Length: 66
Image (cartoon, rainbow, N blue to C red; front, side, top):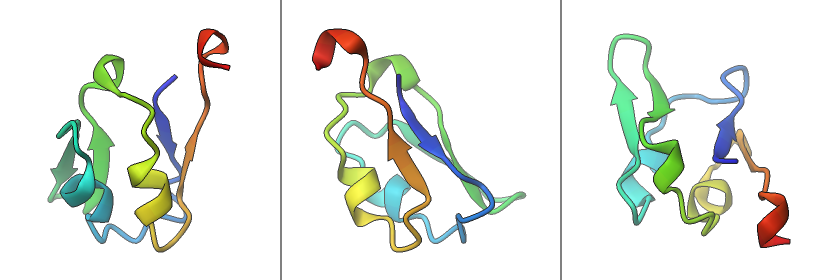
């Protein structure tokens, strides 16, 4: 499962968008929130979760990865 963004916590800073090594996020300028555009291509590296200053991202790992 891809990263899950809690839009109530997210302040729209764009850190996840800027730091994702897979370039999987897009930034909705109208809503000022990031969106995971390509969830099936996520590597589950955790960069977005670790770098988020608001702790608004969590990653749920697929069972086959555990």
